[in-house]
Image (tube, rainbow, N blue to C red; front, side, top):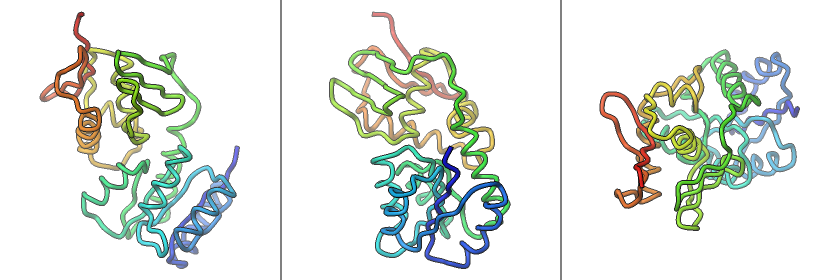
Length: 230
């Protein structure tokens, strides 16, 4: 398996600090000091994971994240000096798997890298890879969602949340169980992340009770993919 990790940050001192800690875990480090270089290095080296700073010249981290997501599901951890919820939510909405707010310790970064990589290890459950509840089709292999034969532009995490709910119809998932299943038990973020993703899924699918299935909020418990008898 490719053991390269791309660190994209215009602050060379941060790269110097992180490099020995990450290399100690057996990874090789590729560095980029601007967004264009990050894309070029990503396409050439095809790293196992990307550490991506938001504030970079030429292309910022959000733009780089979207460009990577258009071609790959490689894990991305965003690095930001900002702590506002909007930046965290935007990072996740653009397809990032996790985020770290500066200042941080090198040990925390290594722990986050390990946590994200553990979540993508091949340990698939015996669940269908394509789920159909006409007129929706969710394909977890290709990370695609079609509604009424039209592809819907969902992020990687939005597709995973939708697929997990739809794979167990009429089963209530708590926020914590969704966080554990999709983001992993080591996730450091806010449980409201789940609410944000559900809200965006509903909005993109334009759900308004028009189908025999729906994503329902079970107050005080969580969410379920409700399928009615037809």
